Each structure stands twice: as C-alpha cells, then as structure tokens.
Amino acid sequence: QVHLVESGGDLVQPGGSLTLSCVASGSVFAIKSANWYRQAPEKQRELVATIDVRSNIDYADSVKGRFTISRDSAKSTAYLQMNNLKPEDTAVYLCNLEILSTRFTTSFYWGQGTQVTVSS
Image (cartoon, rainbow, N blue to C red; front, side, top):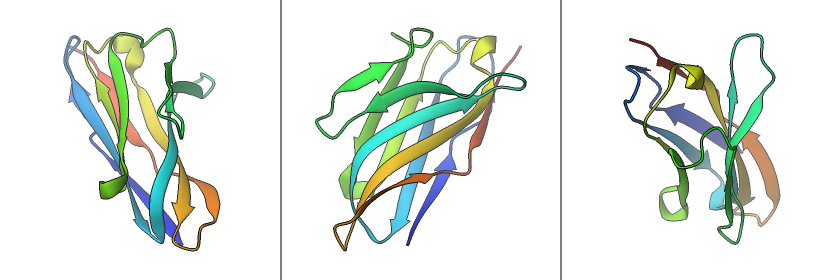
C-alpha cells in the first residue's frame, strides 16, 4: 500500500512564495511521474504542472515562469515551488503521483490536498 501526504499550503500575500510537498510512504520504490492539480471553488480541476518518467516538464500557461515542479525519488517526495503568487492561484492543490512499488507494479495515487490562499 502507498499513502501520500501533502503539506505546505498556507495563507500568503500576493507576490509571495510557497513550496508544496507530497511525500509518498509505504511500498514505494520510485516516483515515476508527478502531477499537481488545483481545484478552486466552482471551477474545474486544473492540471498545473507535470513531470514525466523522463523528467520532461510541462506547465499550465497560467503558471509558466512562476511555478517549478520537481521530484526526489530518494526522499519519495514531489514538490511544487510557487513564486510570485497571485490571488487567482487560490485553490486546493492536489498531488497525483505515479508510483513504482517495491513489487514493481505501477499505480497512480492522490494526496489529500492542501489549501493555498493568496490574499492581502
């Protein structure tokens, strides 16, 4: 079994920065790919950033140049560094990791979500 725990969400002023973490525990051998989504009230869930198994990275246009996705398989952790935050970035952020287990099976798992609020 694999369990994801997110952290790092907070209330921050416009222009501020946050780093979100998504830690995988349990039968984890490696993080193959990682995705960060966000869900704002009354809006559709949006894919914000993705890093694939070859470390190819892509971002939503709305966050390009401000957000950075990364992963550290040794720590079983994925990160989302967010700079120059704007009020429209306010949302619950969810990680979605493709995990290679110690039994060498691959599955996707979701974190519980962490609230990011950007407001003065």
